[in-house]
Length: 58
Image (tube, rainbow, N blue to C red; front, side):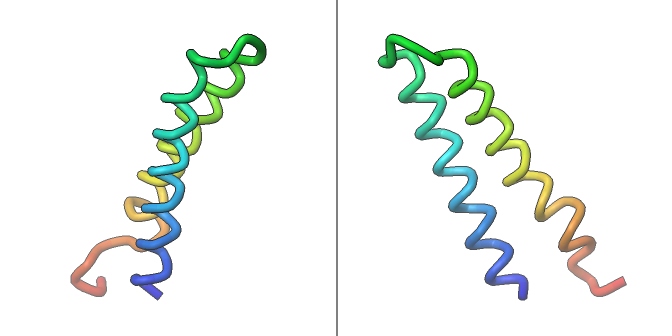
């Protein structure tokens, strides 16, 4: 379960970075795409912090 959550978090993080890097090159919808990248990165950090919990099993 931890490996799957890590892979999902990593994928969301990379996708969010890609969105934020791509947004300035676009002519339309720059702000929503950049905001989507920020939300994707925030979600990728929230999964390990809140869903997985502590690593010592408590």
